[in-house]
Image 1: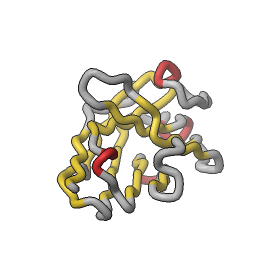
Image 2: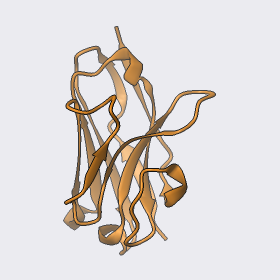
Image 3: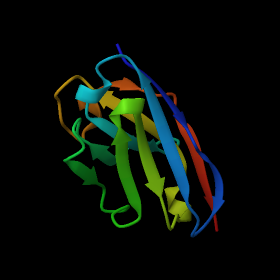
Image 4: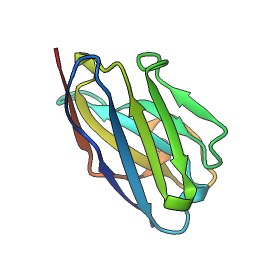
Length: 124
């Protein structure tokens, strides 16, 4: 079992930066792919970025390439999402998620564990 707790959301002006953190409990964190997703009210939950258990493989949605960076520190059981050059359209609830050990994917159905979400609001 993995429990995930996100932090770091908030209100920022367009062009600003935020760093989201997601800390996991459980001994299997270092074997799990971690993903960041976002969801607006009434819309589907979309992948933003993902990072494999070893950190060597990453994925970014086209809309965030060059602006967002996903990283992880397995010693701290934490995954990060550095968000730069934020735009109003980045406003959403952001969720971190974990797969079962040794899995990879960018579809939400691949992820077995989810955090509670953190609100990111970008003002224009």
